[in-house]
Length: 432
Image 1: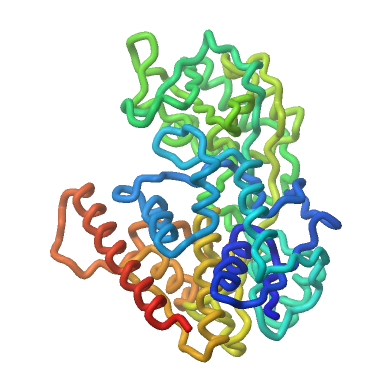
Image 2: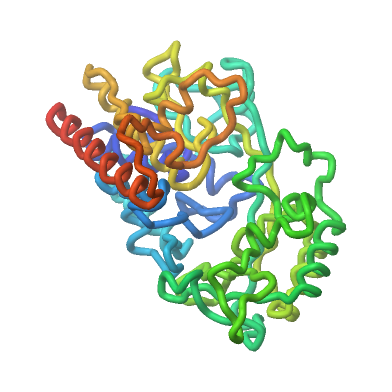
């Protein structure tokens, strides 16, 4: 029986991919007996930082394209996302509880998977480690002894407020440039309100001041207060950008967007507002936004350390350990960053461990696919290695220059989908 350690997105994808191909799997997870500092649910695939899986635009966004590649390969998390999705404009956002419940039921009802509720403290000789960026201390020590430790950065999640505590007189509904179905609640600020908010945000008391060294902060999860400290207009050109929005006949000075956290619309997350402010300070500072002056905070933002491997030194592009081809790693600890990217790595690791078990060579999709490009990224020597999101920049190009950005992205996407279908066909042809 093969062990998959960790029942997050990567672990569940890996276990499901193996089980559907006839492999007996023990999915090992320490919940509900023990939880990481960021988790609280006993269900699998718990979404911590956000309920958004980012853009669902297959032909204009690399993460949207990666999702489609995963659907083609039979991803269980993409199945779960589809049945639990909630309106979020052009993004794929999900009801957290429904999403986790769907994957949990799929895993527990799969005849080739048994769930083992215990903490893994040592590295197995074969299997898949997908314990995430908050791997337990004991297993972290085992990994460090074997591979010499890992790198780390700090990851933050955003606050969530009760829908009935928002002052809707100070909001308007809509998506930028009228795209989507008008699912975001927009909270406009005038110049004075915005500048007061930024001033108080930057000076507010933070939880762990000594931890915020520039080299440790991953740009994709930058705390709002760190972004604001770079200049008073930084947020207006980023998280609080008003472009493509209009209120009372004009563009606001700045806009905070709120996105549904569940299908019932009872809770809304503050989009892009990952923060490490103390809880009392979060309530004080975010309440300066007119629409949130009486907001009830259902969850405050939290900051936690994420650990990832020096993967180019340790892993091959199929996610196996270079000196032990029967042991794989998957998820954020490999250096892919994001829910979708983590799940995708688990899917590929599961497929490749299955191939090894049936005596075949592992396969990695073309570098012209997002999945293949990410897999090669984590295995390519890089003295400044850090986590990577899905993006068009990592794809292999090799085509006549296309100046129009939209046409170029569409070309890249169409080519990637051809390549991933060819990859799937090869998997199916060689399936035992």
